[in-house]
Length: 68
Image (cartoon, rainbow, N blue to C red):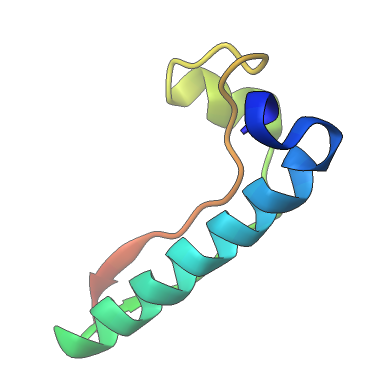
């Protein structure tokens, strides 16, 4: 994103994450599953769990999925 949108990239990343999560909600509804968007989490712990560096790659949004 940064190479294309420069300083506006953080806004585009947030919008894209929202669009992905919205589609996840729709997909879950279609298969009678549930999800819950989570934006409040420990950044360092989540990046470590996903084995990403937190600099070039980082967690933006969480959404667990499960049967209801």
